[in-house]
Image (cartoon, rainbow, N blue to C red; front, side):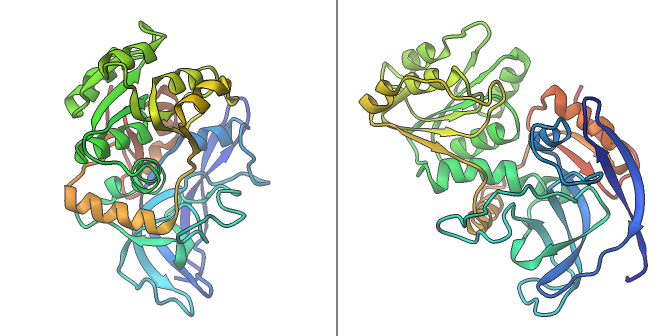
Length: 344
């Protein structure tokens, strides 16, 4: 494979980000690395944040994308974790295997995956679920893993709890599916009645339009008979955090995951102290948690919600779909040259 070429998408960040499909040499795996033929890439909101300058980008035109599903086609020296022919996905942290995160966890965003091939540290690779195709498997590394880490790994999710899920993006929809699979009651908030209907069809017990009911936490308290929710997934930031703290039950948990409305947090401390609630920041998880999620996906036959599946030639359109706010995930199929399907 040395000397062969491959295609990749380069992005030029700025006020009006642009994309260019370029050709370059296939990389060669070194010690501890594997060469993966990429079959699908799942896009994340942080890809947009990098293009818009809200997250630091490397010098020169970056190749965006972090979440992949593919097949190992070559391995470098000292690689025993994976072998040629393995179907794999990639964990979001190279060195965080289990336990406490290392000092540099999530310090540098994973990039370079919107390409036909990528060299990836073998320690970062996890065998893909047997029950999902490449498109579905590619949604697990960030969105699926974040929801799993917040609810199951750290939140000790179990039947009988009430979970508030804010929004209908990738993490939120995975959280809805996982909570229902564990026997929890799920309340979903969104600004879109259409998306709330889709959430109900997916198993949500209650939905709240946060535009029509801006003080949505009061509705949560009504639904729960004044008790509040055991766990709230905070996706907005800003003043919304104060509402999440009001909605959470005594001894409950608020997982701070997204900052879609505001990068600052504003909330009174007294409700947090009075309720003895836990406020936890969640930024994906370790490799072992992703491996646990993969087993759960196979055991539960869980199907990720893909709102748009685009061909490799249609990456700019895929990013436009992501900016509009998908119900679940937007995925690029590397093997496909034309748009496969996407929701209106």
